[in-house]
Image (tube, rainbow, N blue to C red; front, side, top):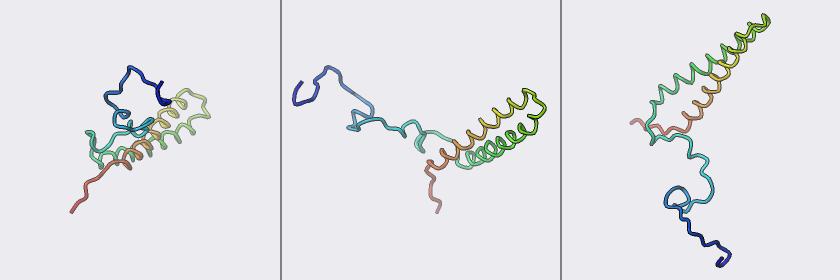
Length: 102
């Protein structure tokens, strides 16, 4: 131990620690505009379909439920997953960089 720092035989050859950053980069898992991605218009269409379609299926499951069938549970899960996917696509779309049109 020298000057309060550990001297070890390990080294970080690449990654965020090699560049002098400390800690975790929490935004690293989100895709950026540099990664191959869909067009913004495609994502916006998917947002509408998933979010509102999921909410419609979720509300349909509420009306089916009084019958006590397992179909209501399946529809509730499908609608919830679709709605959450739509919200996640809204977050993705907000982080995308769009080219300025002249």
